[in-house]
Length: 225
Image (tube, rainbow, N blue to C red):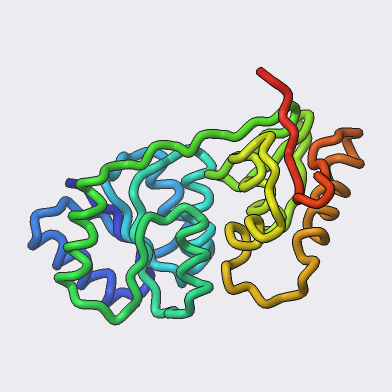
């Protein structure tokens, strides 16, 4: 099995390279994000071990670029950061697993074996509704082939709507799936974000995309294929 190690700290890079080689893997190692993107464009790897804090392109940007060009090689991210937000950012960006430094090398090898058993994940299907296309893999939304810039929460709300087309969604259901079951923010947050989506899609492209169902919630209307 062929592993790419992307780690800029020389001692850690050498440790990873030596340990994985001893475990029977064929290992290539590079020290910055640009080199990783270039190398994966010309060589195939079974798994990538990717540090987050890298010179040039950080790990988040590297994995985003890989997924954008439809490289679905499993990625295990390594970082000294242990904040939940950083782990979520890595996974949402396309990483398959996350390991916080310092770690036991046996755990790293176990996670690599698990990723290799799963193999490269299938590309998430692009969601379509009329002229609107949402790509969960690249977090890109287009309408009438024009890019629609959305915030992370706007994207999440639109994605949930598009996964449940023509269904009435109550505000409670939307909060549970897009925010959190125990969300304690302001009560009209759903209405505010629906307005944001309407401002960016319905009003710009003259659509009646997200409809209000009085007394029940909202419904995203998709024309039949």
